[in-house]
Image (cartoon, rainbow, N blue to C red):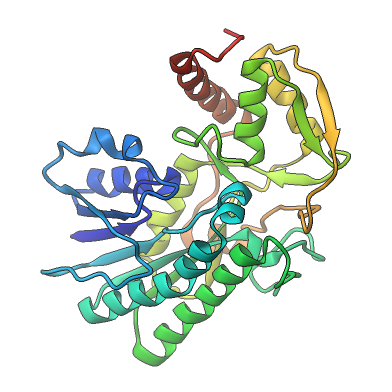
Length: 318
């Protein structure tokens, strides 16, 4: 089996590279390294079944030989990133999806696209199930990511219906684990980095907004099962264990032993007030649900950030 992973040097993409190598696949990692890093895949470079191509998937990609699977994970994925790179984000979702689908069609390969819970926007239905169409501001600052992914989903379904491409769509909810960047901008690395450095913990709004956090190992297992399933509509993957942001900040402080104070800042534009996946479809279709509880997952991830900060000489807690 020969599997192409776009965005393969990113946080989730690098874990997917590991997973498919462990299944005996030849893995071709494609990344332009805007937000991905060679550090994430350095341990894979010696594997004879692994290769890396530095390429922007918003431009056509040509590969010789057969391809069995294409997983399209190339896109900036945090507010810090897609606000810094709004046009590359739009291109990754539109042109990048088009190019990846074209390759899948030409190679008769299975195709799986990384969509996101952000297609639901600031939801008016809670929890969010796949039949909910969302509440998205198309011209807001987050629209470059939200609408890129919504367009990408439409493109994927069109290729399935018009060309018979074997497509899959995963809607990924908040995911965390090793290889998240310290400057990722999302709430977990923000809180852990601030706690370990002894900085103030920044909570936006009053902290009553909710999120649901899924460990990357659980997510990768769900993605793998979906790729090999004869199902083509979107599937939510995430952990339905919901927590408020303020409660989450307290969890991080207790886990890290930090004495950092909590400070409050204004809520960013269009920031979702709630986020919780309905994973009924994933349970029934894939026999999947998260196995790693938040306490265990956070302990693993905290050790990862402690090591990164110690290497930089910037941690104040043990």
